[in-house]
Length: 326
Image (cartoon, rainbow, N blue to C red; front, side):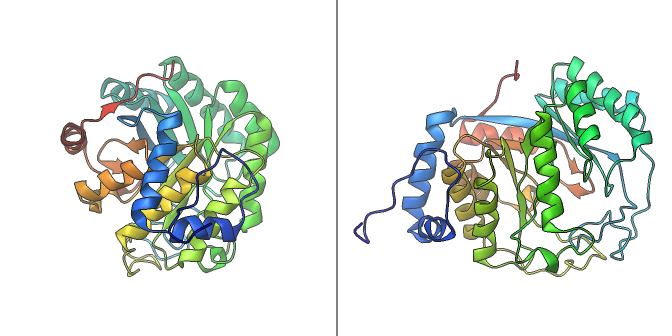
């Protein structure tokens, strides 16, 4: 292949190599963006974005030591621990999210793993949100086989469990669970018949190769994750990454475009970090393959652009929310 000829995007597959992914990533940005957008249009309407809403159903006091997280009880954060919230409050928030245009509702708990005593309440949340006509997603930490099966029986559509970064860099960020633990939970979710939502966080001090390796890991799973969140680190006070150097925005765009090439049918979700992005950077991310964002002014414990800001952005770009999943 001539050096001036960009690699040709290919159909979904699970045999990606680091070297091949690096070749795509390193090509001229305009070629990479053109390929990603061309492939994106084969599976998605390029002018529609899925609107998701995320609610923290249990905040603070987590036993893990994730260096980026304000909810860890180990890394110096002063965020107090709270109990699992009531089912009716979850449903009330879900109704408000649906009225504001959300079609996907995500519930996150700051746990290492849910306890069996919590499962009845979690199942009731899934059943109630599902009955409202919303796609359901939960992120609860590690899952046992029986817990995954119960959530699937309740109607859970997606389970989020990010791998965060590459296997090489992972111990620099988290020591209380292993990279293999992450993959085992994803396998249990997949085997239970729940759709997998798995992505990572950029800007934690990782190198370019770590970002590429993270995507190679996701794209070589037995099935591609149906949902891939790309988070930009939001440095939180009192955490080990509070003073992390900002990521070059072009590296964010390149990573999103590579994710679209490697996992062409996944929902790519531009998640944490949007509150610090310009409209122009968000537009580039959407052009690179993003087709889902979180609405509202909070993401767990972090700021997020509010509905007014997103409506203005959509109007400028000529974008519309995706229709209901049904």
